Image (cartoon, rainbow, N blue to C red; front, side, top):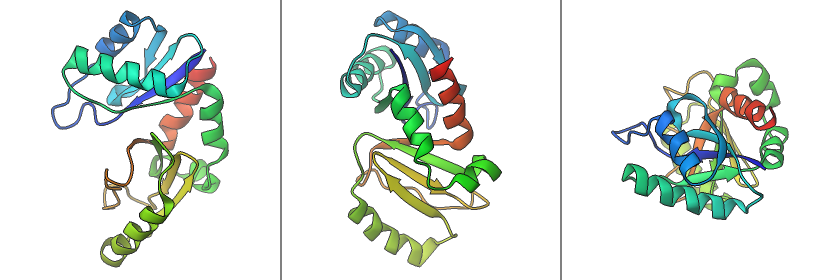
Length: 178
């Protein structure tokens, strides 16, 4: 079975993991056909059918041992990834401006009430018109015209996950099904 694993916060702030080393690490723990996409911690690999949580734990342990850093890992299988794409509440943005649409892939389903409360305070100070929608374990964010000008970064106390822009989401979909 094929899976995608997304590493959180690698190759930022001195947390260096080369994609070549990541592929080698995956092979070393028995995952086959390991491939990466860009240098932000996207790994596609094949292994026997295994629950996501077990794969996440195995990868987190291997990353810590190999690179001497802890990185949360979010794993999805091809059906789950396809469901992420189908559930996108911003299809027009995905078609017209995919670089400014982000999917935050989370460990667990986010607490919508807590996020809504946080958003109220955020919008009072920093609102740039960003749109946010929670669907299952994912949070979709339409950043409007500029991610760089937005201050919308969900606090880690509210959600553990990692974000990918829609272009990357679609490229990973292709890798999962090729």
